[in-house]
Length: 303
Image 1 (tube, rainbow, N blue to C red):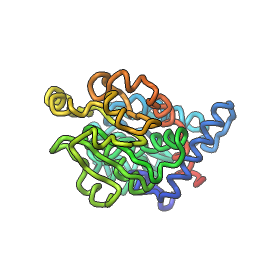
Image 2: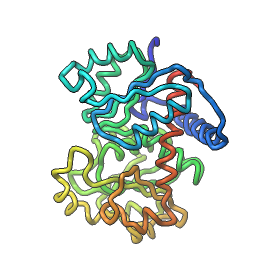
Image 3: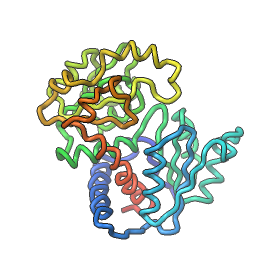
């Protein structure tokens, strides 16, 4: 493929393209509900490189390719030469001559970037320590389904300024909503991301203040993969940032709650919130499938 489009970050798409993907994801979801057969990727292959384990990412991409008529190949470090020290550039050169698109879920964002630089086919960031753009597509699709366009709305991110938070910073810039980020000192999102976000983002310490009149409240686990040794320390630091009924009472009456899962009930979020009337986490999880189908279709056939 000549000059393939990659999806490493929400900034790789225009705001119009993001909105187009969200709309298309809704169409594909409706088609699937009607059991319509739609196979634009028949005989196409997706190589899935997992250096970090996953449930939702693997299942959604694998099922998505199947529903679009294609095939997905799961590659763990134990199954590939990457796990034995092959340079990422060489793996990219080889894999991209055999498959039609590559999804990588890894630790250092630089590995995704270097792979894309040497790939002949589109590369999708399935998650890196810096960003999680595929999850943002699903979150945005879910908000649009429940509340309409997110432009001009207020979003509260409460907790660790991690890869999900960084992608929300990019989303705020791209889709023109305001983002209040409540996090402890030293756990802020990427300084570079914040610099480009401008007036759309504010960092604060008080989660109650961040949640004030929010249309969407979002959180994530306090210790991500690779941070397990910090679990106890982080629990002490982040306990004031738990999303509970008191936080949701500060938000708008029709606010929705999201969490990319897996969730630790009674840690970053109480059961009363994640299982309560504001929560749309199950739609959010399902929409990984449909938004990624829209993304694959866009990158491979340009629709």
